[in-house]
Length: 300
View 1 (cartoon, rainbow, N blue to C red):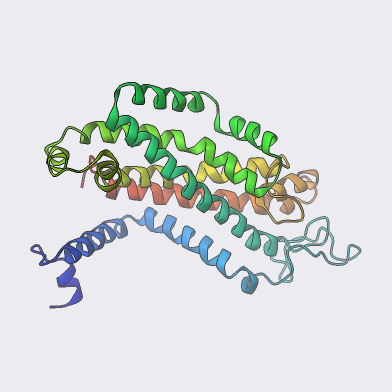
View 2 (tube, rainbow, N blue to C red):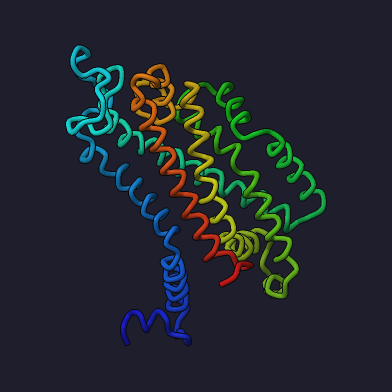
């Protein structure tokens, strides 16, 4: 039996075979979506660019060149995306800025997703006053635009990439909580959960061991689709000087510093803007593809 036949076997002989078979079928379905594969390619390119930034970038992203001869040079073979007002290679700064973008995206996902899952599944499972209190707190966060709320938190915590990550994470978890609560309400009264209760499982084990895994597919879709918003929020904070601080190469801060030269030296602000657009588009395309594949209510 070949590996493909083993993965596609309709009668798996073990739980491991069934799990890997499901992963493989999901991958085959995702691979048929060309736009999703384009999005996946962009995301993988972002990851590779961040990992190998020191190898890819031809110049130092922080130290500039001679201001008399290398300041505000247009795109050329020597500087693929031109140079900024301090003689720094824009391509090198964008490549190293991908590390900042990837760091923000990863940290926000790691912080916000568990919080949203915990709040949403707890509210949906316990109901009553627990549901009322947790959902009213969630509604308070949802009542404010994400960027405005993030600005308020960063203003209180102080500028910096770490505080920006915390602020964005604090403002990102409420949609995940609402989604997890809705999923939990449809799960908590099923025979599957009742059988687990009869076996003596407590609320913590039921929530984290059985309810959360069933909610993960919907939450993963929402997190992937939210990545573009997270990137734009981080860029907005950087543009306002509240995110990554100079001379750190952050795309939003690069746009802010280049807006003064937008008419005569368009590439200074345009190149990081294109980077934000492409990466945001990639996450959106990938999220749409994952929604088509992982959504249990969608058409297969």
